[in-house]
Length: 125
Image (cartoon, rainbow, N blue to C red; front, side, top):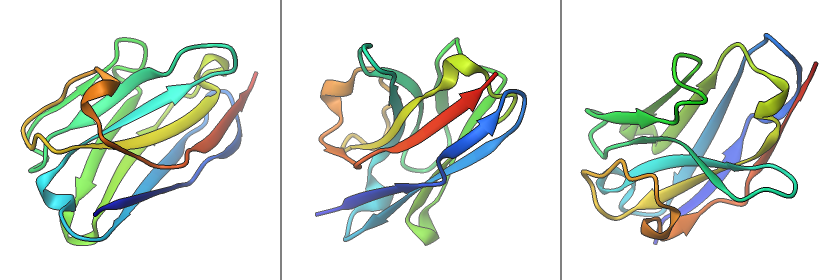
């Protein structure tokens, strides 16, 4: 059973960058598609970006396209979210999630059966 632990969150000024990491322990990471979601106070959890098990295909939300990049290194059991040109509206708790369908970039959280505990990202304007 894979377990997920996010890191890299923090407080940053608007226009700056952060890189989030999600480290997976246990077996099976390389066979899972992975995604990042976020949840701001008082709002529903929303899709940010996803990547297939091989890393060959990605997708991202329109709100972050061109600013955020998802990637993974299977040899390190880690998925990343590079966030550039951060905006105040990016403030949220960011979660990584695993999907046992290795070739999926679905935006629907119901398809992800394993979640990390989240890491807070706060962007000051």
